[in-house]
Image (spheres, helix red, strand yellow):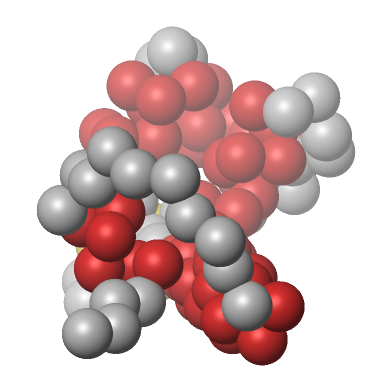
Length: 101
């Protein structure tokens, strides 16, 4: 009977193993692939642009909507006309939060 290291870990087996080097390599490859997929998801999620409303940006940045209007006029944080309303790029809001612009 043969088990993979993943199966043994799932079953929380409390055993001592002698492992063939190829099995150990396969397990290392498995861990690398799982970690790579998780990191790719984080990067893709972070890169996905969102467009919060004026009210949401006002709350995020803790400024009045008049301040956002003034920043738009000065070009500091430009809004986008979106479906009859105004929205902001979340990436630009994050840049301000991180001390950019």
